[in-house]
Amino acid sequence: MASSKTVLAAIFTASLYFTATLAFPAHHEGAYPIGQSPKPDLSPDYYRATCPQADEIVVSVLKKAIAKEQRIAASLLRLLFHDCFVQGCDASVLLDDNDGVVSEKNAIPNKNSIRGFEVIDEIKAALEEACPHTVSCADTIALAARGSTVLSGGPYWEIPLGRKDSKTANMMLANKNLPPPNATLHRLVKFFQRQGLDKVDLVALSGSHTIGMARCVSFKQRLYNQHRDNKPDKTLEKLFYQTLASVCPRTGGDSSIRPLDFASPAKFDNTYYKLILEGRGLLNSDQVLWTGNDPEIAELVRSYAENESLFFEHYVNSIIKMGNISPLTGYNGEIRKNCRVANKNI
Ligand code: HEM
Image (tube, rainbow, N blue to C red; front, top):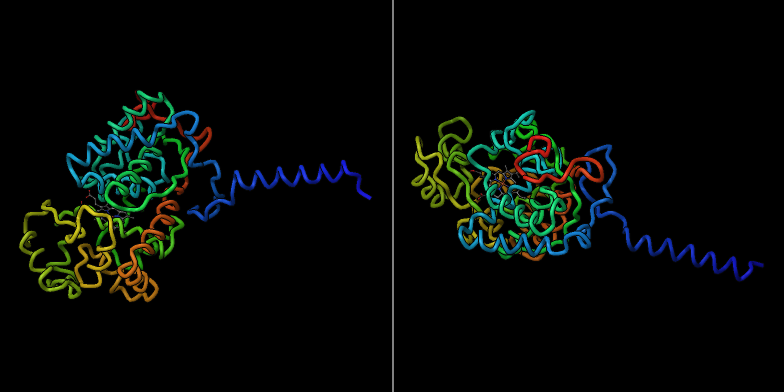
């Protein structure tokens, strides 16, 4: 017969296990490149003791920046994508050219296109003042992306935090891993798969194009030479085509900009998908989600167009997954003082 001591010990052990399971729940199904294990080191409470006001600081700078220019919310959200798809979410995208660093800012998908660096600098300066050498630039990007989404009317999500910053950037990898706007649907799926992301992630995260702008050069091929045949993309709705052509002539005007979701360019909602159903998606990569002959993907577009809550629910799952791509944690990486420069180069 088991003594009462043994029984008590068993209960104690079981309760320890139970508490530990609650404290470290099974990791959210995330995006981990093949062969890499989940990173349980990230936690939404990471700065609870060291910088509890971090998010408040981020949001207060964001509010001012967005009041000055609405589009900046979109630009900051995009930074997370362009950071995470290139050697993981490590703020490599923020590094300027320097000793041993070839900036990703000059990669084709980024050059004259990604923006928001001054706002990140301002947020980081405020964080350094309140909590010196504590909040990484990679987490700053993640917090800025969420804040921008929420302030644009989109969903909130708990961000696993604790990423460290890289000491290097990789321009070649930025050219390789960031999908171009004229990609076929098949290739888009491949770009996402390479990051451990699936078709749901592709469709949900493309919904980020519910806010922000694109330059003519990013969609001009659709207007004049879609299949190298000197003809427009047949999937473009007629009136929409005419409006775009009037802003983006065959030659010149490459830097003129158009909203990705012209119906509500500053509101994070599901209009992006509704427009796609009408042939009024701006980029080829937007429209092919509907016309690219993948029934599973097309069905997702239709369901998000019909059901905004479903879009938000999937979006939150997918952006957490994207934010978990290969973070540097623990003793790997560093907390940069200045997001543009590795500490050794200061
Ligand atoms: C599916 C593949 C994707 C492609 C091919 C793509 C491509 C592009 C292009 C070409 C632009 C316009 C850039 C310019 O003309 O300067 C753009 C803008 C934007 N992208 Fe994407 N994107 C993709 C996915 C994503 C994802 C996953 C996110 C975020 C999670 C995102 C967020 C944004 C935002 C918010 C803008 C507007 C930025 C601004 O106004 O400054 N995109 N994207």
